[in-house]
Structure formats: structure tokens, C-alpha cells
Length: 320
Image 1: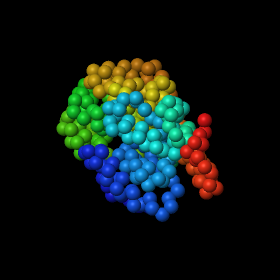
Image 2: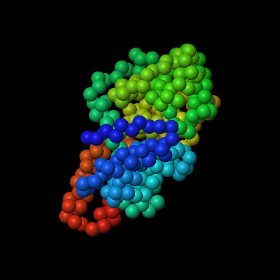
Image 3: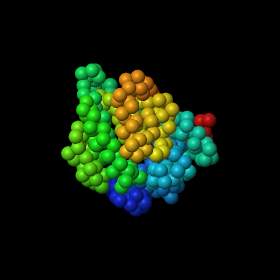
Image 4: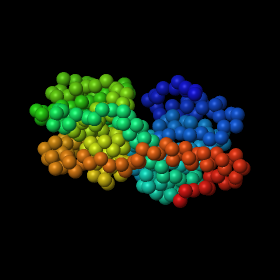
């Protein structure tokens, strides 16, 4: 294992370049396949190093699209660039695979589910049963960090939470993000607000514990958009567009944007209407069944076998 020790920075394009430069020397010596996951600057930086070195690239979580390069920025741009050059594309859903086919990518597309659901179910299997809803406080769990929300968006989200905090029987747990800009701004806006508790950034298992006992989640996180339906917790997505429409289609999530009025109105409706809450609280698995990793591993094993056998046109082998 080799740690790059290249922390994120304010300019994501600069971070891409630094990661590319750091990964490039690691690709000498007959590397057969480079695997990247997601749409971060680290993922694109590594993929670009692979493309330049002529090393085949596999992309886990391929095909996610909003259709708008600015929302989210720069992730939409980065994942599209990775998919355009990847040899193996592991799409989490049929919708993601359809996006790839529409773009006529040259790599092989495989629908596998998302490995994030694998991790979620493994963590959940080790946890004790949650406290029954009747025995726990009515909690709204909140996270936000998206770059497109910096500025007015964060202010508007904080305003909605202050409004919701006026509801006497609701507790709001806001998990601070490690990004210094987001952390400092939200702490400034929410510190001292009634019924709002600021929580330090937490590890994934703790986040899952908090999610599954929440009455409602408000978040702009891509991972939480996948996890909330699987846990059966209603979710309001604090974004104008999402590359994960499946959770909305199955009724577990709603896209509300960052308008304070829209957020507060949608949250109050769910808080006040048990039937509405129940409709959104059914467990569903639009992003996978917990077996994405072995599916991906099996495809890679087959691909490596073909590579060792000298098969030609590996890029053109497609599961559809």
C-alpha cells in the first residue's frame, strides 16, 4: 500500500495535477489495471496518470450524471472524463449504465450495485437493534458540504434549521464537515440556535448509527442519498440537481434544493404527517443489494484472465 499524502485543496484542478504527478511513477513495471472509485480530484488525477501511461483503468461508480457540468462542480466534469477513457466501467444502477451507453463510451459496462451499500450492510450487521421510534427523541440529522452551496446556500440551509429548531419536540443534530470553510461558516451560523447541536465530524460507523435512529435526514451527500433508502430513513436532498435519481423515484427521498422556505416546508410536512413519514420510511435498495464488491471482483478476474491470455480488444468486451 502506498499513501500519497496529498491533502485536498481549495483549487480542485491543482489537486488533480498533484495527484497525477504523484501516481505516475507508481505505474511503471508492468501494472495491469488501475482501479479508481468515484468522482473526486484524486480519482481523476489517478485516472489521468493511467491514461497517460497506457495502463488500463477501471472506474467504480461509473455513469452518475446530472447532465449539468456546473451541478455538481467539478464532480460532473471529473466523472465524465474518467468514464470517457476507462476500460472497465462499473455502474451502480441501470440508470447509470444507460447514461454511459448514451455517451457511447468505449469501455465495457457492468451493472454491479454500489460498494457503499456493501459497507453499510456490513456495518449494520454488527450493530444492536435500534431503539424503537417511540422511545427516542424526534431527531433531524443534517450534513452539508457541497461546493455549489458555499455562500448563499449554506446561509439558507442554516436559516431553515433555525426555523425548524423552533419546533419544541424536534432535536437537530448537525454534523460538521472537515472542510474548514464549511465547518467555520456553519458553526458561526448555527452556534446557539435553539434545539441545534453541533457534532464533530464522525467516522462512518458512528454516522450509520446516527442515521438509523434519525426521524428525518437533510443532506447534500451522495453517499447518504444511497444509504438513507437502505436504512429506511426519509431524506430531503439539499441540492438543486442529483446524479442519484433512483432514491427519489422509489419514494425515499425528495429533492428540495437550498431554499430555506422549501427545506422548512418539506421537513414540517414530514414531521407533522405520520402517514407521509411512513411512506418515505420503507427500506429500499435502489443502489445495490450488498454484493457489488464480489461482482466487481469477478469481472476483474475475468478481464485479467483474458489479458494474460493475450486477447485483443479488451476494451470492447461489454456486458450488454
